[in-house]
Image (cartoon, rainbow, N blue to C red):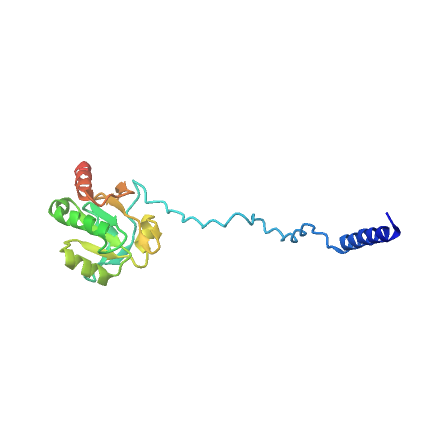
Length: 201
């Protein structure tokens, strides 16, 4: 190798080293600063709070001392109805499919039911809504306006998104709760009520 070749090779090696030294090192990016802990894992989305169910009025309890207006404006005081069994059925909303099936079933057997008991429907709808519902389907019983939720609270009936749960209470002539239907099936409920009234004697 002559001296010119040696010089060229030396220059190439030096240039390569200088480029290697100047080239930025591709190191992994440093981790982001830790966010102060709030006590909840960041990867776990906050769960929606559950709606606590109220405790339904139990068998053996006295009928609550509450009152509410019916669709004709009459104020109904529950404790003044003692002397005859009472059916208080809560339902979610006027003129909706399930509530209409339930109301029409009670209507169709109302003559028999009314021989033994007073029947009252209750929802959070207004008296005006009840009046339209009753007139549309020829409902012969009173529907109570519980837009204040006073009756639902007194009976322990849960109200979700403004609508009462479908629950029925059968109360005897002495004003004591004798039967609670906590999960009512609208279809055929009137027949269940007739059977319950017969069991009261």
